[in-house]
Image (tube, rainbow, N blue to C red; front, side, top):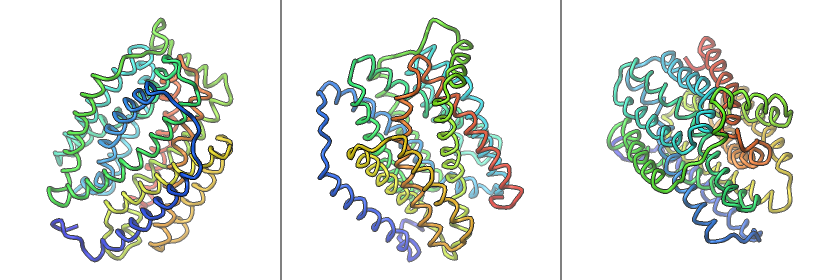
Length: 403
């Protein structure tokens, strides 16, 4: 976009967005014919809203940065190799923090760690205003640390509170479904808002919008959520040791964690690589905001697939296996075919798989992960994931695939 005007090149990506929006509308309308017969209480609905609304606001702040992070670094004049190093630094920080952030949450409070996420992400966004490589690197450190909290402490808080309030286990699935669908909607809107903000106020503007959302989300979180803990009677070191024992002693936890690590490692490498991949295969400018929003529509579609599959009595474990297989094929195609349209469609299929994966993985974690060390186990299992991402990014740079 230039000066807020829609160009001819943007119309192609708007067409894809409109096509996917129509598909999502059609599928969700058809899905209403299969009604969920689960009846929940008003008290549970209030609890669910309290978690989902706050989580989605803060997730929106995180997603707001997605379409323009690579582009912002590039606009500051940093080379692709330097940008690759910034991404590696962020994932490396997330891997390091994952070794202890879950233990801190279980010991000192999951709400406190969620508040720390807000502070760290706010600082990360603030530093995006500087073109200095050193300050951008510091921002990536803050961002990596916040990521390790986002994907462990928030869900751990919700699961503990759900159990503490004695709600039935099957009601938790409703929360996961709502979060999955809401995440897609919020991320889609975030992409559009980011495009508008960047078009009218510059590429750093989406990060300013994110800072506003962070402040609002932290205010709500601080007022609405009670504190909860894992096992407070043992030290942080002991909590960490217990999480390792839980992983090592239960093959199901280990295999689930490994499958999650591999899928999410692929997902985060995709986050880094989709922009340069589509740019290199297109002879015309790519509208990153519209593409990102189309990806989010695909995630919404995936969440609907998950809900419908379970409504017909499908196995969560089998769904995870099938999703990983389809996602692997979708990511393999762009490595063999350099045609822009085929790459874009393959990426759409992968994002549908992401939409299925999120609630599926959450359901499996709620079924198999121990409550007393849940945050620690979840955070610990993100260590190999982030190390894999770092390894891949370190390899693609020398191969000139990114740098």
